[in-house]
Image 1: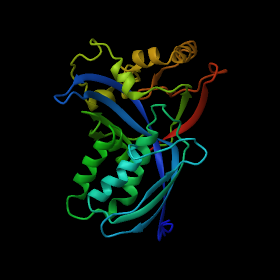
Image 2 (image 1 turned 90 degrees about the vertical axis):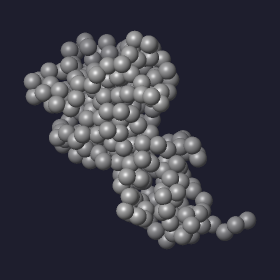
Image 3 (image 1 turned 180 degrees about the vertical axis):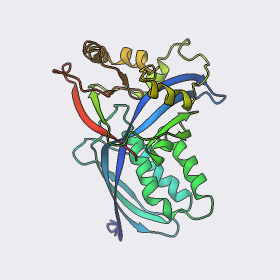
Image 4 (image 1 turned 90 degrees about the horizontal axis):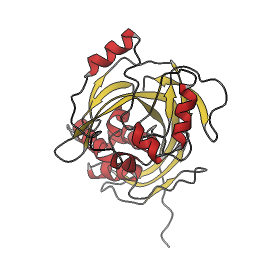
Length: 286
C-alpha cells in the first residue's frame, strides 16, 4: 500500500456564485454551440475551498476531491478535476493535491456552482503556470471547462457574447440586495438546451452592452428575460408555480442561466410555493 501523500502547501479561497440578469439565445456558431448574449453578475454567495498540495516538477500525483455534507462526488469528468489537470498540462508543478469544497451555492440552480469552483481553483493556482502567455492559456482553459468559467475567472459584472467568453465589463451593483427563489428539482443544462424549439434557436442579432446600460438607466425591465425559460419550465413543472407566485405580486423577475433558480431585485412577500426557498444575498464586484 503506497504511503499517504504529504501536503506542504495550503490555500483557502472563495468561489462566488453568479446570476444571469438576462439571457438571449442568438442561434448556433459554426461548431454547433449555441451563441448567447447575457449579462453576468457575481453574488455574495460562495463555496469555500481548501486546497492542499505538494509541488512536483512533472505535475504528477493523486487528486482527491471531497465535498463534505453535500453528497456530491466529483470525479475525473468534473470541471474541478479537469481544471487541475489543465493547470498541470500548462506546466504548473502541482503534485499530489487534496481539495475540500464546502458547498454553499445550490446545486443545479443556474448559479454557476461547479463553474465557480473551477474558476476559483484557476485563480488560486494561476501563479504556478510558467511563461509569458499565461493569461491567454488560462482563458482558453477556462472556456474548455464551461461557458460560465471565463466570466467567473474575472467576476464583477459583464456583458457576454459567444459561448459566454467574449466579455465586456459593466459597472457592478456592489452591495445591492437580490432575492433568489430556489426551486427544487434543478435543471440539467444540456437537457434545457436540447429542449429548445427550432424557432428559439433561430439566428438573431445581439443587442450589445450599450442597450443593456440604456435599459437600466431608463428603469425598463425589458432586459429581465431569459430565452431558456420555456424549455426549463417544461422540464421542471415546479417553475410554473414560482412564476405564478412572483407574477401575482407584480414583481419583475427572471430565471438565472438554465435554471432552476430565479431572482428578483425586489423582496417577495408571503410563503413561496411548496418546496421552494427564498434566499436574500447581495451583488458583488467579484
